[in-house]
Image (cartoon, rainbow, N blue to C red):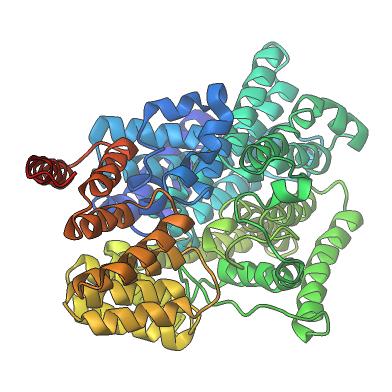
Length: 624
């Protein structure tokens, strides 16, 4: 690494050569850190939002603007979460890349992960290019020397590339939403700055900026902050007047309505008569004010945790058990807000003390970037999880820029300039090596669902969902005893976790433990109403069917269908109930309904033939 840095420095007079060396380093490091993850299997939301999502694998889904309302309510008709439609409508560009991956290689994860790794490396290159433009064309550029002109861009980009906190946005396939959104975010900023410094191609760069913004806004919601970031970079880093920076960003600012409009249209399609409040919560369902209040109070602590993880990445966890703040009187609120305000205030003080210093401007701008880009996820609109590592992916750029600018600023105050350079380069090299090793080992936990959720369970032992997912991972490997134990730990952690009751009853039913399965399902139904209640009713119906208690089986299965009309298992089990009781017409009706919901499989086709045959014999004997 030291030799590589010396080559960059020695080739400072040859920018093409220096950048070529940098691009080669990015590609090499990216391949070394993430190349071995290519064959790792899909996990968790990869399955929910793509592998098992019928909308994502059908090219006709991309025609949804022509039948918007029907598409928005389609998942509910299929017995699926309405969030699948919301996600697709608001992020079609990323879904298009998933669809192209699927078309090219089916469900082979290597193609999906290769694209994710390429996007991550591309983001690192764009970060460096963005900063090279700033350092070369800023009105404050005279305040930096040749060392800073390569040190700030290269260091910021490499820290972003190798940091272990980024693994969730790279190795976790479905989080391409985040990395691809960041790619468009950076492209838009680069095009905006190029339009400012290259007058000949100004119109072309502006068109590129608008195109990247639109594509980005159809990829991830945090692109809503991109126009604000443009103004901030133009003003603080490039040295423009604030009014002029706002005027130059007007085409980008005019695109603000895209994301709110999509959310509002989707909300109106799924729930006619809904308003802006419903639109903000359309992806997560109705949220009580108490939950919204607690989410907002907790976010200062969450933001401070992101900062801690970016500086000291220990305890990384796909599903952290972050404690919610329930009252404004909680000391964590004031301590967290105090630390964040103090950090922002300190960087602002340095900027105001030396407004012509590009290093101080980058330090303050990096801090502002972190808070601005994180504002969509960490604000008053509650998301399903209080904290998620991938939300820090784009904001981390600001933190790395601030850290690098701060160390470079400290170097200039060192009494021996030549020695200071060696100290800074040595510290930077050590940081890159340390973070690379941590990232390499962090990827080990993504090797399989069992290793991933075992790691999460060791770090979040009191979070029921972690144990449910670990149980699902064991079940996929046919380790039913371990799966059942994991579900029991989930119930012990949270007696209201209906998913655990449902999955445990399913395991017991498959093992022939009919009485235990029935009792588990009943216990789950005693918990507050949730999306899993229809599955619990369905399991109860299957238990009663196994016990030949047909009236109770029919009653339970009908309850399941009342809650989820498209639930395939309930239709099939109800067809078996009617077949067992000799009601062949109703049995056939349910099987034919299943055939209309999707392409019939071999089992369904055979069942239809058997019912039709029994129906024919029944009528032949005169029982009409």
